[in-house]
Length: 186
Image 1: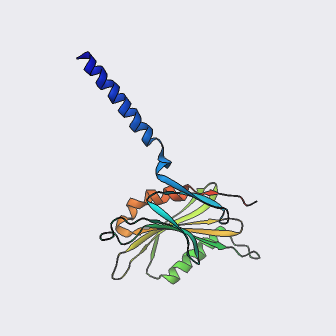
Image 2: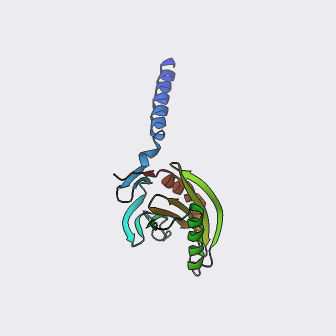
Image 3: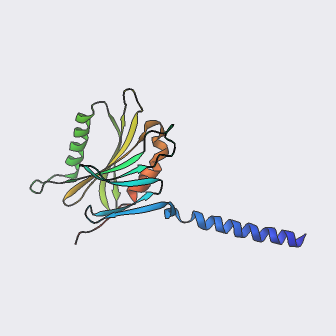
């Protein structure tokens, strides 16, 4: 009986420590995308795929891979819009953020902007807000927008999910955005 208890304890300890080691590496399920041209690297879940040059305004995007095309027709996504800042005009961070929100409201009048805040990503001031977009005849969408200004460019990061699933994806979106590492151009 003592031998079987000792064997049980040994197997329990080995099993427990091997599970613990597996959980202690949170980046195990992530890939890293790096672009010297864009000036940053970012970690994203292996369940997402990177797409370069999604359109003329979005040089890099990350879409969740759809595994159930019957029940899930919208891939949750993180889009990076990188735009140059005018070289001869001084634009304050606050004014740029206000202009971006005004432009968004003009393009999509039915959106509702909420949860406005200022945070820091790698010691760089970042504006963050959430917006809800009702879609006539289809799924409603909810997005979290992050705006980061660098010396010569603005990075607008839009994280979008179907509104009913947005809260479930929010930790993933925050993890992706908070993994950004800016690269100094040489």
